[in-house]
Length: 151
Image (cartoon, rainbow, N blue to C red; front, side):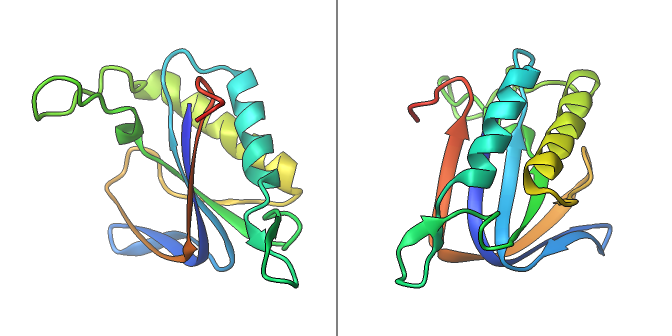
């Protein structure tokens, strides 16, 4: 499972012109799911994302987590995070999970993040054509991969 975390001052996602999820200060997280992902991957990533110290403290040092700044999370599914570009110029998505596998894992990630944060999170709509808007604060963008924890 892969996450792309972006520290934002605001982020929203629209489906068919309607906002389905929106936050102010917090993290906009894209999640890519593959068949080999498990509950262990979800727990590790949700814990890491919610506790990663990438928000400024009173001295302007990135020393606080999204939980500590009482920020919010917007989680959006994105199968293209598992694109393989090894051959040719057309990405292959063979490693990205199909909906029967991905949807339960996506829903489990939502539940785990809500547990970590102690409150509901915002989401996109799985499988929909989504329009994402955000203001990246910093910019700060971090990639987490449960299969490559040194990444």
